[in-house]
Image (cartoon, rainbow, N blue to C red; front, side):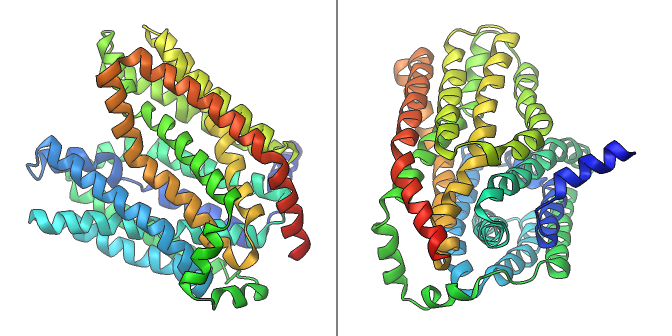
Length: 407
């Protein structure tokens, strides 16, 4: 019992009460993330869409998510963190249930785009709130904990969703809506407004002036560009990898087992990695993440069996853990206090855009030049990522020290 208490103290020390409400709410919300994993299946089986039509709807979800990152980031700085989070978490359930009951194709299209928007509108606000609540040295740990919470829910939600879908697809939408609403209640009860007082000046600037700041921020733009490359490679695990495994005689069940290694590793290693992250130098850790990502996907060129593909998943998952733990902290460290929401929104938009670039670029290379060319390109992209992160280290460090002094 004493050891358990000591372990809990080590896990929780240094992070404020409001953070733990965000963390608990994230787990609840992600445990009910039923709709997106089954959206294509719902549209093709229950609504009679073709595969192409269903894929278009999923793309509309991605478009909504991409827009939400930018709009949510700007609103976070102007209105505050709490109003944006609450608006997202209380409007999204209405849209979710609405999407589950509408029938016309046009309404489903609009509902899917709105769902992508409101489901992800809160993300820049939560990232900015963590930057407000946690000092720079503790941010990798805090963001790592949230990342772990997201993946814990993502590992469980598809199983629960499958059981609900056997009864009625509408239960997926209702269950997703309820858990999102509960997250809103948790924020309402335990998360106050965190926007610092010194952020008020920047929030009153015109949108053009604020966008000019972003355009004159080469470090953020370069870092976001690297995130887009990272996300484009990462998406191959969900787009071209199953096709490649099938070409070697492996089944969908085999692919499911290989990808399950990803979720299991994150759940097992996520918390230890988060607790160690404050001791990692930011950009060398990201450089290592790039190498691991490229190496893991590059090994697919040699793999022909389930163990071979599973080993590749292990390697790129280690890169994912490193990158997801450290990258949001870098954005928070670079951001002026009045721009924390917008900076996180711009960074998050890169991942939304990767939702499009990953399938388009990966599919084109795979079809035009073959799988070996794709996996070789992924390996080279990992090396580019590593080089880019190392090149950013010195100027970013100078900028971070300046921002710390200003704060």
